[in-house]
Image 1: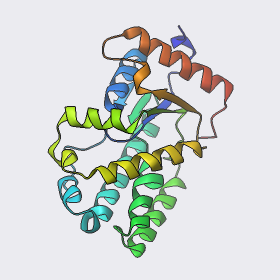
Image 2: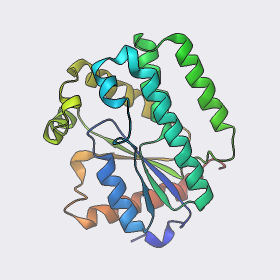
Image 3: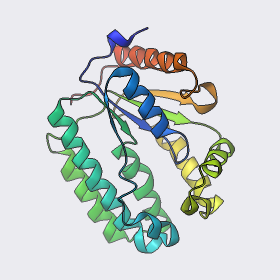
Length: 219
């Protein structure tokens, strides 16, 4: 077991598309490591339901809300000196969702430029540490859609299959070129962190090996 090899000021981000199990993984890793868990502010997001009903009208509002919330979390993590596991990374918002809506025409080009200018300004502040590792959860589209169906969120169930197909494709392309920090790739069919604590320990071993072999960019 390599718990002792994980620095107590580490920051890990759990990434992957909707329904892949990010929140469950975040809770399991944070609990086992004795870290704080940082979750997406979904319940208080005033744009989420509106977004799923009208992408073109609400995509910019939604992404600006998430950008602001994630930056506030980055600041909190910095001020607390680390020891966090984050549910989803700010890099996904920028590299997948905002870009997808700009590419698909569901976000105005001027709005997208404004969004990117805000993100780039945030990156230049001292409150924006890179994670020590990105834990990327992946699986087949069919497996992920089954999980979305089991979860039963109405706004997700009403979303077209085409949207999920495009999101899945973009995630696969995005992770192959991601270089902001070391990456631990996990297939969702290979573990069960809810029922098997040994799976959590094995994942932590993988994280320890990756951050030992691949130095993290300067924070």
